[in-house]
Image 1: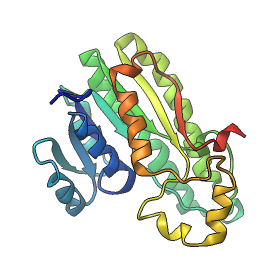
Image 2: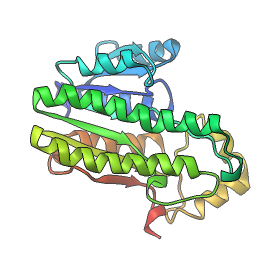
Image 3: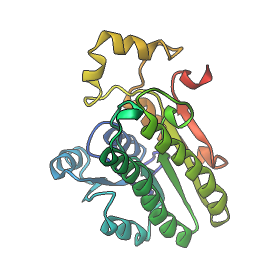
Image 4: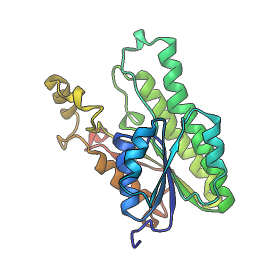
Amino acid sequence: MTGILAGRHAVVTGAGRGLGRAIVKALVAEGARVTAVSRTRADLDSLVAEAPNQIIALVGDVQDAALHEAIAGMTDLDILVNNAGGNRPMLMVDVDDATLDHLIGLNIRSAYKVAQAAAQAMTRAGRGVIINMSSQMGHVGAAKRTVYCMSKHAIEGLTKAMAVELAPSGVRVVSVAPTFVLTPMTEPMFADPAFRDSVLDMIPMRELARPEDVAAGVVFLASDGARMITGNSLRIDGGWTAR
């Protein structure tokens, strides 16, 4: 392998579909060996089939202690892409306790525990890069996204604090903050012309992000080209947050 990530081992959570899947492919294309984490075996099997010598399937749930222990015990972990997360858009006055608890548990607690596990492995080795998946909503606010915005602002704060704490151990911590990304999961939302226009009106570039756009940013942040970048958020948002 002659790619910029040749010889490195990455873990990507939420790897089975959409953004996570694109990130796995981009890391592999640059020579990395990737442990792809998903709850769905079929998604992982189809992903491994695309690069069987470079992708390792790990069926697991980011909320389970067993997965955290597995990551913490790794002896060759160079890159973590802390990608798993979710959203349930609704007005704040309608948010029920089950939705609130689910999103806090998935987007904050699980992200923290996975990052903590990777930090334990990386500090032992004295090297590594942790890339937390944030959102443009980690920098701004929006209607029907109070819980999601809260969770992604938390990820941005976590990234900064981890970066300061782990820098002496040789570990960098950064976040990636995309705008709306067109994936099979979000495509039905954009079939509604009114919703699509409302989103594009907020993006000066008048384009939705593609999974490959975000994956390219992840590859850069994981590479030696970003060796002096830590505690920062890469906003892949077409200018949404520049307003």
